[in-house]
Length: 260
Image (cartoon, rainbow, N blue to C red; front, side, top):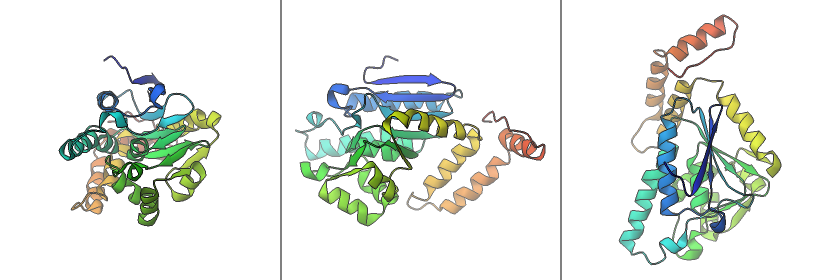
């Protein structure tokens, strides 16, 4: 698969995706969303990939928003279709992937960029990062899940303020809000996410996938997350990873999980 807007690197179980449109501060366009979807779908089904990192190329931007030129003249119907397709192809898709996905926010994460980061399972930011949802300043609202995920992460009041003011917050404020887990100097961002990724990869891929599904269930209307947890907990007992994990624990050795 030829990639024009992203760069994919894979080493020792970790796939790193760099969104690579530096002339547009890595803004998301339809082609980039499609490339991301196809790439993520491919690596989510690759047993050799245990972790996924999404970041931006360069030192200025993670993703500085959506490519406004693509939809500035859309009708209401076209706008709704744009949001629906984008959510299905990328944002909802990432949230429900079985492989853990970390957003490494290395600069501006605005609009669709912040929505992309919020769809990931958690976020790490460099100290120069700026985050916000500026859509209301353009006469529109966040359309890639921002009005739903931001309140889930930071609470309704803070989300309302961020959306209505269309302003940016810095990385330290984002950490206080719970929007990002860690803030580090930009020079340390790579080492930080690699350290966390390697810690995650020591654990059972099957159990992690089941945990992701159970956590997400709490946010699905009409689904009882406790019931999903109970089922997934039980399912784990039938896996090779469970047998390996418990045997290793009782034998006082490190487990070697195979994701089965």
